[in-house]
Image (tube, rainbow, N blue to C red; front, side):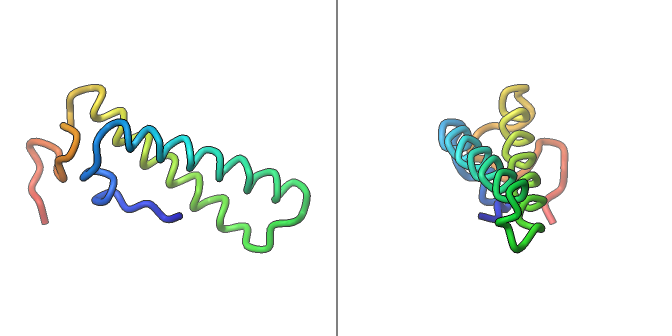
Length: 80
């Protein structure tokens, strides 16, 4: 499950929280598989960690009021 930041920014806070829970569960599962030598592609752990970080970042921006739920850009920045 690769998460794209633009995709996250279009959804509301509850959906982001739900996706964060799912991503954390996936990360825990991957770490367990890695520890038990059942994981073939170890890069999946890194991708899952980054997905969790992206979700937490956008959620924190919403909580601080930096970003409003459902907006694509941070106020004061240019959109490419």
